[in-house]
Every structure is written in structure tokens, then in C-alpha cells.
Image 1 (cartoon, helix red, strand yellow):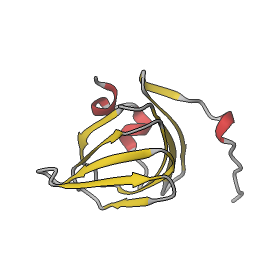
Image 2 (cartoon, one colour):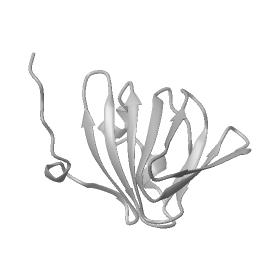
Image 3 (cartoon, helix red, strand yellow):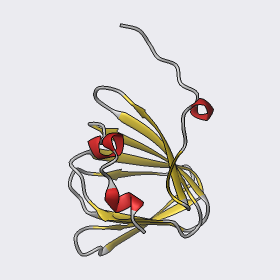
Image 4 (cartoon, one colour):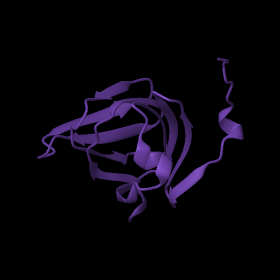
Length: 121
């Protein structure tokens, strides 16, 4: 067993759409991601079994939560949103935003590229 040291700038930056990019660190039981969103970038409505913490480092993400999207929350720099397993949600960057997402367990769809909901316009 040994520790692993990462530098964000050394990790590949994956382009999902012209206005949405990410870098990933994944281990056996958790995943950490930097998500880079231009102003107006949209993450379409989806749900997943993975528990999620979203920590905004820069900017603001607006979230619509629930099947009917009735709960609206703006998450600003320095704030964290916990999204429980299987809660439908979508998001839009109100300004250029850097978001740190933590998932447990890791998102298999992000690792194998089957996250078409995020790649489609």
C-alpha cells in the first residue's frame, strides 16, 4: 500500500462539450473531479446511485432538484451541496465556474465514457 500524489495541472482535461470540461481522480471507493463550466453551460437532468458532494471553488451553479425540479438552489463559491443517491438534478453555470465533485462510489459512466447525457448538446 502506498499514497499517490496528484497535480491537477498534470491530469488530462477532457472536453465533454465546448463549454464543459473535467479532470478526474478515481480510486477504488471514491472519485474526485474538477468540472470547468463556462457561463451558460448546462448539465442536463439526470440521477445516479452515487452520493455526491459538489463544492464550488469559483463561480455559481444553479441546481434544480427533484423529479419535478421544484427545488431551486444557487451554490456559490465556498459553498457545498450534498446530492443524495438517486435524486434527479440538473444544473446551469450562471458565470464561469470551477466545481469540485466528490462521488462515492466512483461514477462508472464517467470512467467508461457512457455518460452520453453529459456529452449530448
